[in-house]
Length: 342
Image 1: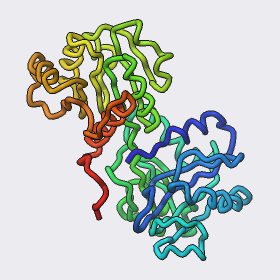
Image 2: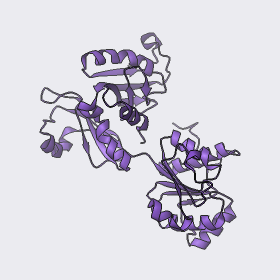
Image 3: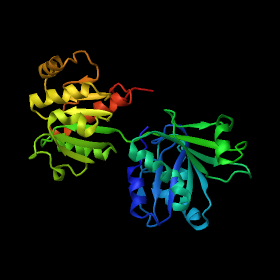
């Protein structure tokens, strides 16, 4: 699960001396917008960074956060909309689910509720596991947290007896603790081979979805940072030097330079990498030619024409189609309709 931590981490980095309210989803039942482990940050001006619902709970959470600001004591807030009781909440959510949230005042002294511990791993593209203590007995303070350098692929409650190795390093009794383990998966990394005008919408959309993007092109007139403000890197080097300058340590890649000889060089290097999704722009015949020339016929990681069939006909909708396909592959989805599913 991509937690979308970039706006939270950026807000803290912009004002590291300040306190914030960290809101964490700790339990859900039924239909909910976000799942356990999702987080949102409130600053002292009342601004919100991230979401823990579709925008329905956030206004009420401002009021719920006031005692936490004043006392510094964490609290747990529960919204139970399974009966859609508007007379109780007056929120009109219609989500028909239950959400429990932990609100805690955080600052540099407590590593911003664990966000400070996550940041080095997030930036390095490494998985980690954030353990939060939700409720505890007298021997364990409320809302303690620590980090493991390994992560399961799920966010789930953990029984304290499964964490005895942690007790040795934290010197805390875990017997009465109610813990939540948040699997922090780094933001997906996307490599775009090509820097033509049709690349800008893909960079913009990927950036909005909290992907980390590198743009690579051999043409100095195209590979300009000003054209791609959302990209982490814009690299101008020969096509055959792709692996040298990027290491090709990416989750997904899209080949879209519209220059067949260069694309063949990109495909040759990408095919030898561990990139899970490789999108190829252009018709089937072009894909087959590229894969035949490079010896990757039958490699299921290559998708071409890149993108899901959504009727895309503009650079922006083509970008949407491509990113949706890459997201589907990386998350083992099927790209089908949600309508009619249980």
